[in-house]
Length: 72
Image (cartoon, rainbow, N blue to C red; front, side):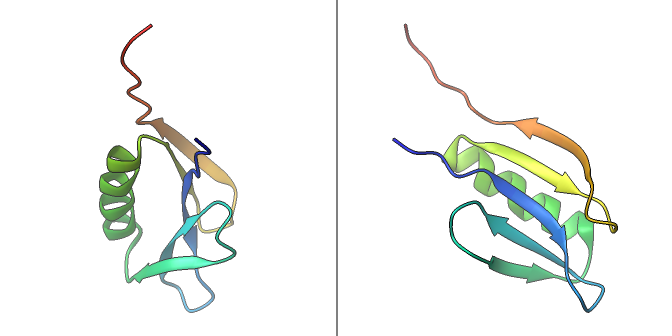
């Protein structure tokens, strides 16, 4: 199964967006980075993928792994 990591990215209008790799664009928009991170973390946990948080300059600030694969 192909995984699509989730990115928290700045928008042109000083907001924040959740962008899923491979989808070609933002899937939802938020007024603050904190709100976008909270929503993105929930989605990353559900999808068991990486959450990649970008700063206002677009550079990666940090990542969080929610890949909880269990088993051999």
